[in-house]
Amino acid sequence: MKKALGILIIFLIFIMMIFLQINFFNWFTISGVKANIFILLVLFIGLYLNKTYGFILGAIFGMILDYLFGRVIGIYALMFSVVRTYCRNIREKIFKR
Image (cartoon, rainbow, N blue to C red; front, side):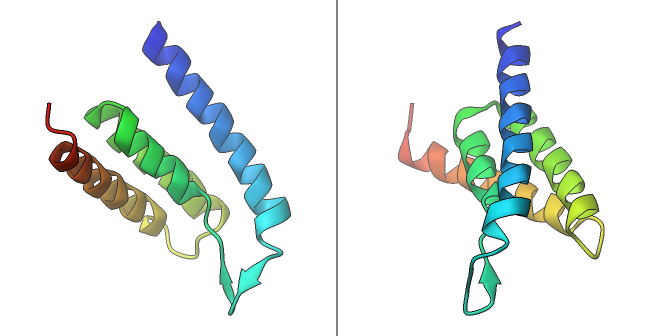
């Protein structure tokens, strides 16, 4: 129940981030490069969630963003899965339990 509530909250945050990305962050560019705030969410998931949930959520979020913003299906999904895995590996090296 606690994990399901956490995943639901993450999905709600993801929906809010889609709204912010479409309506706010697409207007601001630095040398033609737009900010991608979804990387922050994926990094958070990689640091604080279980490996399986993080990988699945990263892939799902990436596929949704591929559908909304991408020209090629799978680029965001692959990128988010790799970023989540890399972040998780760094966490395990820094915080040895």
